Image 1 (spheres, rainbow, N blue to C red):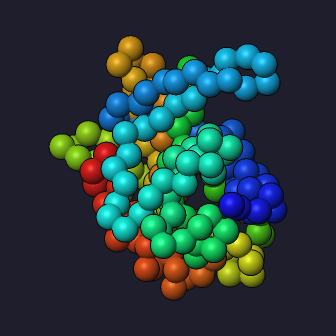
Image 2 (tube, rainbow, N blue to C red; image 1 turned 45 degrees about the horizontal axis):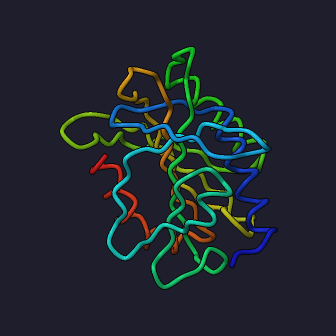
Length: 189
């Protein structure tokens, strides 16, 4: 079980990222799900779940992301979470526009947040290159530390998407402890 407070906080952060995101280059799949008495599209990236981690199906379905937590933790007690967010990019906006929006979101969430560009990480076989950033807002009780990696991708029909792979943690120590698992997702993409 996970609390509605935790869901709202993650939902808000993901919604802000939603507004800014579009695809990568490694096999985005489209699914249709029931929502509000209709069918709605849901996009899923081919994410390799790291050893010691598992998908939290309930959070994934509610937040419309692939949400991963350490196998021995629940959504509520996980000190770090990894999620993959995929958004359709019909206008084929450049990655730089999504990055700019992501930075704006962090500055709105915490005016004192430290935002830094990190070295890019190439995906498997030289496919997608992830542009990476770190965000630190130690005064926030939840999600005060994040690593965000963004790329563009297509599906089998050539449609464009933004893909974000995010490691979100409540402390710097939790972020550091989960970083190897997080990087393994990027390198396998």
